[in-house]
Amino acid sequence: MLPLTLDGHRVSTMDRKLKEVAAKLNIENILTKRTYEVSGGQAQRTAIARAIIHSPLLLLADEPTGNLDSKAAKDVMELFEKINRDTGVTTVMVTHDSKSASYCHRVIFIKDGQFFNEIHRGDSRQKFCQQIIDVLSLFGGETNDIFSIGPK
Image (cartoon, rainbow, N blue to C red; front, side, top):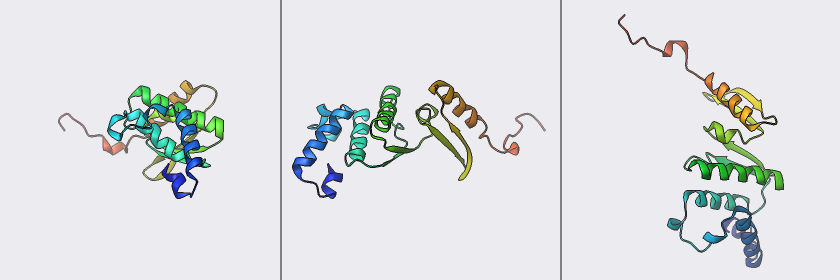
């Protein structure tokens, strides 16, 4: 509830919003737990709750699935999709994970600090994921980065 406290909301408003967001993120059962008692996925959902509790227009996410197993990562990405669909919140996400990126509507690739490419998702997330992998395959290094192993 820290963002609401900083915004000066009443305790009754904070309690109501906490219950709404916890229900939306399916974390009601951890509200009374200590930090060491929650899983990585629950901790990530808690971070998302903290980010969305004051109804922002923009959500920034830096490697939101980086420390999660594949099931928890899928849940988090589906949650970002749902938040966008239900509330219109735009999410800007930095990730190195092509599967997580495939949940986005648009992917911008940056290489060495420069714009490299941009692709947009169509109807198929699977095809989009393959497009992401295809673009990533072009990232390689310079041609002189590969050295011969054999005798010269």
